[in-house]
Length: 167
Image (cartoon, rainbow, N blue to C red; front, side, top):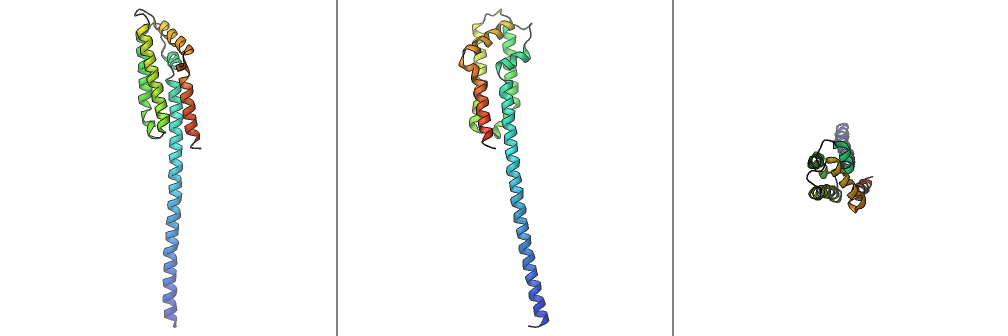
């Protein structure tokens, strides 16, 4: 083999090695980026579970009563204020369902619906001329005696369990 043939073979070998090295680099870069995407996805899911945990606390009836209670409210005014607060909190966080399990989202939805049902039931039983304070008292007494009073704790446990699966 002459010098020019050796040069051509060497040049072709270097070119092939460069292409192979470039392909390996691109593959590793892709794997790293995919890993970052998965990690970013987990972070978003954990943040969604965190927001749901906060939502559960915020739509628990005792929590809402402490925020919206006004001694000048009638029972009907108080009922409407609590219902409005629950609906606003839920609507504000509705996009979180994209990032969480169906079980966790169903638990939060069930809590919201149970709270609204309870408010409706107490609203029909309490006298029309009752004060907001007596409405609040009736709700809190019912929750202390009924298993639905523990529903926010159960939903929080579901959310915690689902979030821990990501860790």
